[in-house]
Image 1 (tube, rainbow, N blue to C red):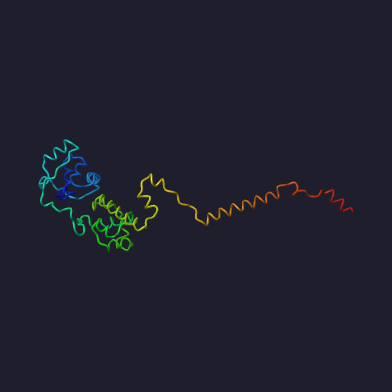
Image 2: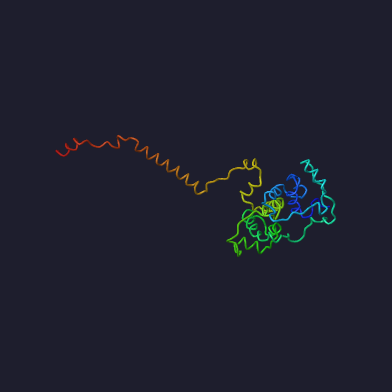
Length: 250
């Protein structure tokens, strides 16, 4: 039996609007992230989604809500609903409501821009789109590419943060196994202590390093030349004018 109510996000909208339950209580009951519930309360997530009454749908008792409001640590208990069995095992492409389908290109652009490691199949699972659409946005040949704005699909309510994190981790592991990860990507996946312990790579190209040696050798030559003219008196020791006149009289 699933531990989530039917229409979880719509149920969360109803609980936010009609109860004083904490964000964590609602998130735990609906199987959402606490930040998603906060986004619903702020109007940033699930905008336009109509609340679904869990009491009227026989998924929750009023007594459970009262217990939760009295004790912030109390976890709401979902009533058994045979219709909810197997809901987690979703097959086929993700269904996207009509009101949100116009936001999918912006979400795809965000994923392509900030998570280029994601494969087309992963993006399709997250936002419920097709590979040709993803490819056209990657290649910037989409008919409306100039009007698109990259927007986080979690903020748009197209997927959950946990789902996005899971896909990103899968892509990172795959790239690491294939050995195609860049140094920046590798540093992002390790802890701060590990990153600080990494040896710094040489920042000067070989050609510049050679110029350093050339400069040092030139400096030595200049020092050698300076030693030859260190005796300034001998360098400027010219014959006196009286001696020149004596030679002319002779």
